[in-house]
Image (tube, rainbow over all chains, first blue to last red; front, side, top):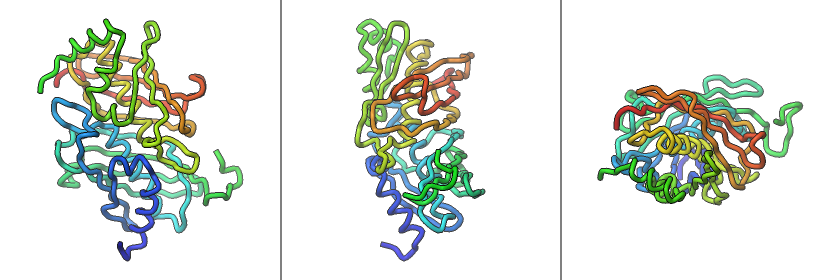
Length: 151
Length: 147
């Protein structure tokens, strides 16, 4: 495996999410600066049969997951953080037959909310396919209800 | 490959069977979405499917699947009712998650607030038990003028 504890935590988190296994998502990199996941190209996620371009929904799943799991880069312990909202702006369509990478960082952490931002790219992170922002609610550690924090 | 989408839409309306239109898109088939016509309204259904689960403890459907389902429902809605001659292209998508999407059937309805020559704005609502308690709302812009 790996001796990077962040990558290990991200991998453990990712492996629990069934739909991410179906899409074949994997951890590409994790550091205190953020998380990168990889979505392999496959014909089952095509959104336009005329061009072979993958569906925006698969990119949304990649980025929702990347933003959500990027919380392990800033939180000392595992916490359940459901998504409050997510916005994706598409810069240009993905190229068919190429994997997509998703990067996300938590740029503000409060006791209740985590603000994340990121982007999806193929060859060059400077030429992103999509920009993303997402907010996540902190629910505390599993089994522990924070005062007035449970939604 | 070149598709005559308008012919497929006409045929689906005539037969009141939208499977062929849905099955055209591999991603829609992957998550297992369906189209139901109720009078003049179109309701999209996503049957409970273990492969769509994100949170295993609740269990709940992956938020990305809910968003992908809503995005595709909006695209099909534009194709079916607004006479778009090709696949609308997504420009942006913004979703608010209001409740956990439990492991059960999910429904979606769309409203086109504005369709111009180049861009369409669509509001999308997703619910499970009752439409008055949505699990998510979203809005999206699509480019509709060229392939």
